[in-house]
Image (cartoon, rainbow, N blue to C red; front, side, top):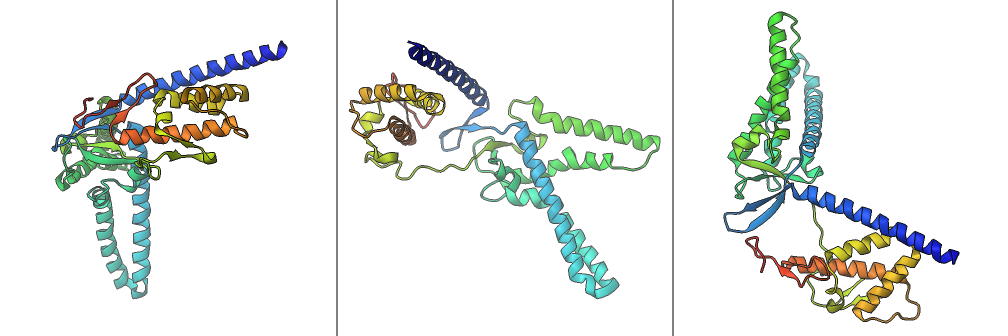
Amino acid sequence: MARAKATDKASGESRREAIRRRDLRLKEQERQAKRVRPLVTPEGAALNLKIASASERAGAFLLDFTLQIMLIIASVWLIALAFSSMGFEGWQIAGSVSAVVVFLLRNFYFVFFEIGRKAATPGKRALGLRVAARNGGRLTANAVLARNFMRELEVFLPLSLLLMTAEDEISAWIRLLGVAWTGVFVLFPLFNRDKLRVGDLIAGTIVIHAPRTKLKKDITSAAPIESVAGYVFRDAELDIYGIHELHVLEDVLRQSTKEIKARVAERIRAKIGREKQAGDEDLAFLEAYYAALRARLEQRMLFGERKADKFDTGTKSDPLGGKK
């Protein structure tokens, strides 16, 4: 009797924890959905793009700015080292060459990386971001130049005013103007829905998420998906459940007790019409079914079919954004 009560108590706690995790997951999904923007390309294809947050953009800029400073210091040091053996004349040449290199790194660091195929600086790539055109078209060189040259007015010019060392009344007013200028431009992304800089508004660009994705091997194969522990599941066995059940199963694997895992495994076997074989372990079965179900759902998503839960008969997405 006491053991049954303890089991029921553990089951209740696990159920409450699963509900709490589900609520947190739904709230996070709702928050992330607010960052998704529909974009129709010139070819008529509808894309749902996730915009970068202000903190992510600030982090990418700090990474790039740090790398930019390191490149400038390393370049000047190497140039000075190369011309140091030529005496005074060598130092003059080194100064001239260094000035050119600093100018190029200072003004074209961001342009060089964003005008390339990846449309992202090293800082943006580290955070999974890239620059895109807001009209859905190709990112042009003019747009890249415009958004980056505006950075001079947004950041570097007011910073240079702030670094002025004169202490007279005029320089104090100029410094105050620099503080106000910097505040307006730096905080500007916080006061618009798409977290755009002034340079983005002028250039018609937007910074979006472009995380690296890796699909599972043979995900488009029509053959049954083989998962861990030697289990093989047919498509009919996997098509019973949807995305919601996948999340629930994930919570069961992470949080629940051994008894709950056994009951869930028994319920899944009954649902898909599979008998428990001698030597089958419930945990191995659940992990195998979770991996196979996830692969199957991703496989269907590749073909525009999204199954929300076990009650969903399956919807196929239209390339223009609707459903069939």
